[in-house]
Length: 355
Image 1: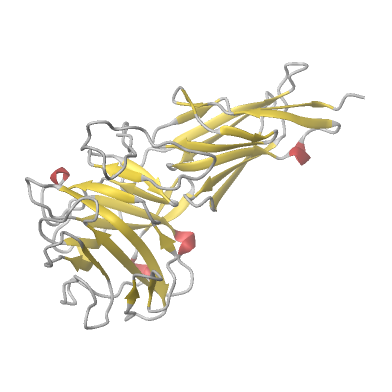
Image 2 (image 1 turned 45 degrees about the vertical axis):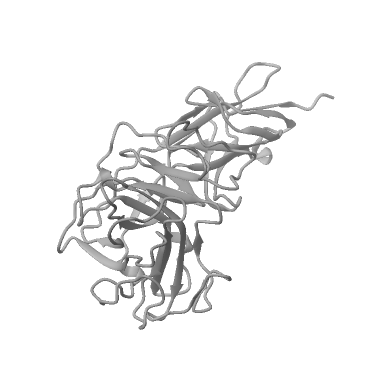
């Protein structure tokens, strides 16, 4: 069951070298992909997306019988950097706890599915344990793998493969998530929910989750662990919307029956979700229940009335600020939506061909 909230903190993007929260700025979009991003989850309820996955600061109460750890990681090398992945293989490769109670294989069928914005995601939870005086921690690398074996080993940092398998999801170089352990009250509670599109999990019955912490914000406390929530409840997600018109500028009338397509992209410009709708008699269209992400919207010129041609497109505004750009007469790209955003006036024009 969704526990719908009414407001959200907006994630920010900043470089690792910037001073702590002295100058936060909103993440920007150029064309339809973002080469690198920082998702700032250091305030309660913050949310952001990287490469199609949703990262959400979520303090779900857990404890014995509620959280089921799949990998517990704690570095002891003095560098503040720690890494590891879940597996039944032994010996373990990195900083994983050796007990099978804490580091083990994970079947895909055990990972809950949730619906956000009409897309099915798999839900993973992360709990971190940092010192009260140094509560911040970075998640710097995240890759998910699938296999029909439960004991894959030999992660290769150079090729980014596990047991020769390529990742089905990769957070990507330069992208990282900033976490704040003060936002939860200790062990047995999550600090972050991770949603990964279900569509990527092809090719095996087992899921492997490799993660690396501490590069941008050093690990200075206890263990970090990825867990599966036994109740399968989804964290609350407030979705976004986008709308506009298709009109004939010569008559001022709207054009009904035009098929509109909205595409959601990961940070590499790959489409992973597509939605369609049709303009009403006034030429109005709308897409609702959208997850945070990067979007484009286009009109299908083959559905324009006979004798009409597309004339132009114009980017609208998201919560009052211009966002996106016209890429062609029938396409607007580079639209960035976060939780609770309302995008309006993503408009297109068409008219009869002049004889």
